[in-house]
Length: 304
Image 1 (cartoon, rainbow, N blue to C red):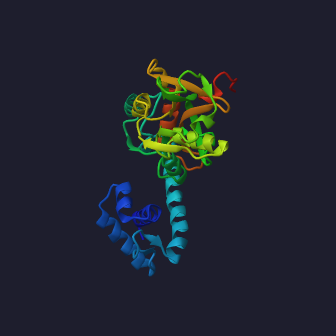
Image 2: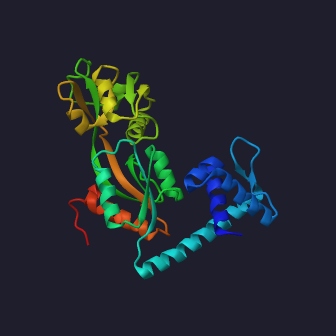
Image 3: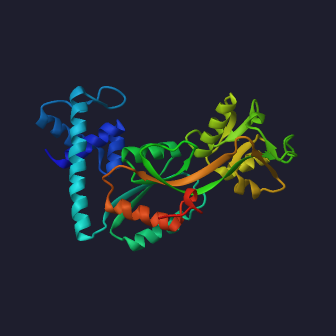
């Protein structure tokens, strides 16, 4: 039995797919299949059910998965001890980022980190915030730059670097354009333009509407907030946008504050709260927090 076989098995179990596991491991898919077949042969049990459209664990596979994770975590812990003892920072950091990350020069952050830690390989992946947070919680990502809702996700540490009001942006010809503040209820039965589900701003919109007792009618979904502003400007429907973005369309968009309750868009660096966290991940988190400055939630407060 080899550690590589256990690593491949855990990846397939978590991804429910040989193809996705191979992509995650940066190896060829046939190699993953071969190594897991060898592991099953050595154990004398099939660990995976391959008969359906997705790969599922057998009863034996479910039991082995727990032990396999324990073994891999133990080996990772040994490497952490050695790296810390020798003072080396090396390895790989897998970072997730939302498709539209306001308030951050990501290329500069990554370039400066690479200059300071050239032996650390950095991998970057884009996705929606909900999926990124799930992957940080499960350990598939070491850290992620995400948009947050009012609810703090469990199992992660957060460093909030953007916290600004969200407004309802309408075209200058909209009947609401003359108003400065509205309740969220004005969106009831209106055709809206919005980011897709899984994004922070969409979650804020959905949560506020749910509190008011209705489900928003989203007629257009786009993944770029700038395009969202353009659609609202062309009178295709109100949009929930960051106040700073809406301000850039002064004269073309009217920005209405939501009162009560106020809506806020937050961006944060998220990383796992549980050990083990590799020296490379700790180095990246420390670097990113330094670049981002004090957490928005702690600014103005005394620190020990």
